[in-house]
Length: 376
Ligand code: GMT
Image 1 (tube, rainbow, N blue to C red):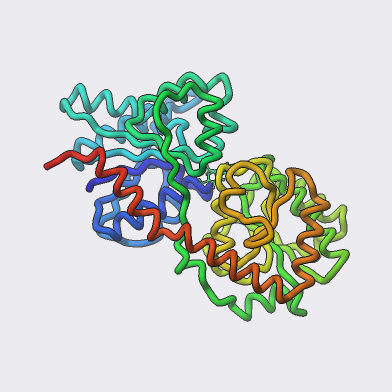
Image 2 (cartoon, helix red, strand yellow; image 1 turned 180 degrees about the vertical axis):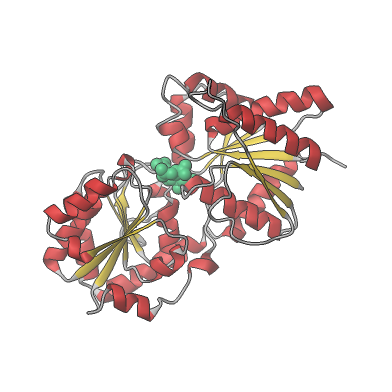
């Protein structure tokens, strides 16, 4: 098949998932065309089946807001027509689903062709941004106009039906992880630099936005530090980072925390971590947590959104209510004080992550695509 993939090229989970999906489809022999404004961060391989089409947004002094959606739709039309695409798969509804609708109409008029559009909902496009009155009518319309709609968890499916008047079926296709990539032995030298005295290592990775409650990560770590020697790795960057660093200084734990910024080699960093903290207000799925589990890190998270669909309480990790720093700290201290339990839960987390392995999910997407593909 010739598949167009539209996504955000940044470190966000939706872009990561879309890129990994495209890479895997290319490995299966499909021709994959990424259409986005920048080379996706995880698109770091050469594969003759992968094409990358950059959306250029020409500016003009009149434009306070350059019209990205128009440029995106035009690029979609160009790629569909010139590479004879079979379908478009757009990740994150805003503005990809509405741009795809526009492209679909143009291709219909120009070439009398119906190009199927599949929209995958990822989370904040529904729960945060999409709900906003400013965007809602366009989001509702363009989701309904998609030929197929998928959501990355049951929770997100339900949230979408609750918040938008969607009259089509939303199929759940869970996010996936390439377990082979994350099942790595820790690099000893790296572990020694981070934790020279064999301290336990906690970790968090996100885009440091309010929804991630990064301050709760620091508060849990401060409680753990009172009970045992430990280190914390903070991966990623975003608006809450300065306040988070300030809180670490205030609580006197800054010397034991490393802010690593944005990182591509997540598998090497996750491999040295014992516990992964994800105290978010909401996660439609929590891809970062799944990657941590595949790397044998035990996830201590909130029980928000789709996290309950990937973490099993007391078996693969622990969950607490949003903001319940005390309970999350207690879980972390109990677990990190009991090596046998820690090893058992690490193994259980890994085994559970294997159920979400890429090899199980790619065929599901292929089956979905084949329902809409032209019969030659
Ligand atoms: O978490 C973010 O802010 C990034 C966001 C995105 O769209 O890239 O992540 C969402 O999609 C991921 C991939 O499907 C999910 O794993 C995340 O849980 C989801 N984030 C939220 O729901 C807050």
